[in-house]
Image 1 (cartoon, rainbow, N blue to C red):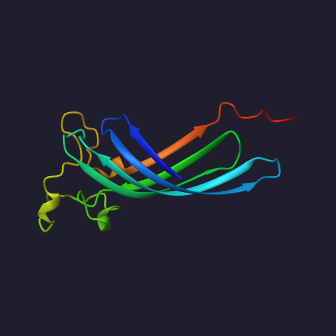
Image 2: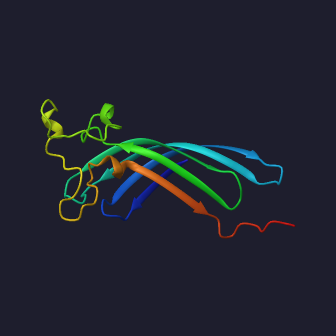
Image 3: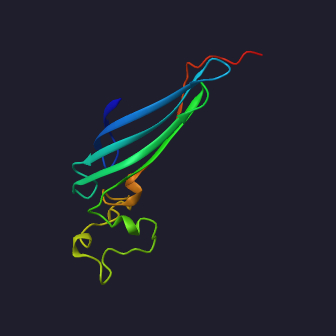
Length: 138
């Protein structure tokens, strides 16, 4: 399944996601599902007025009729090397770092929010609740 979405947030974006679902009928008759997806994201005018293009993977599941969750990460290879993703002390202005990363601010100086280049901008976590889910039978 393909999904086209537009998100409203400080780094508003447009994204396209390819989802692959697997389903299995539970003992209670509920069709449990899990999925993975590939997402391309374009931040056309981020919080610091720059562009960021991201690619990534997401995974999700819904084990019962009431709720489910999805999480993923989408990386912008022009903002930082993928090898430095888990290095919290990585500094784009440090000596020896490629100059292509030097002029990419990781946070907005005016608000303190993560910029379109921040690794936090690429983190996605969603919990969803089905308000119309059938009630449990006692």
